[in-house]
Image 1 (cartoon, rainbow, N blue to C red):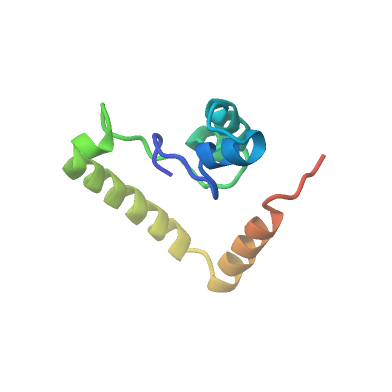
Image 2: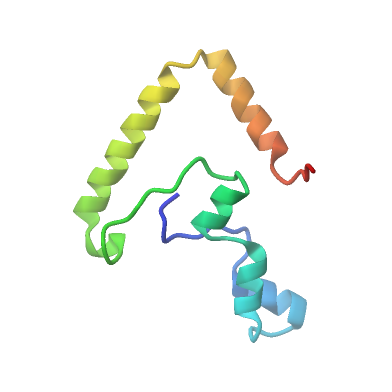
Length: 103
């Protein structure tokens, strides 16, 4: 996941609108949703965070494209060394563990 992106099934504004009937609590909703790259990594929902060029990736699309290409190649090369059945099994296990609380 890119370091300055966020991922959620609902926007903080929509979440605030549902819970509090207005957008006034969108910051509180955003915090509760844990939607940043750091939150996603901590909760094991993503495999890693890709650093963006200084400023923001939209300001340096060529640099970001090169960085993303390098990262993808690195991970594809690593993953291609794992037998397909083991890779599929580990991904199924990872996705089945999402949302499950373990002490």
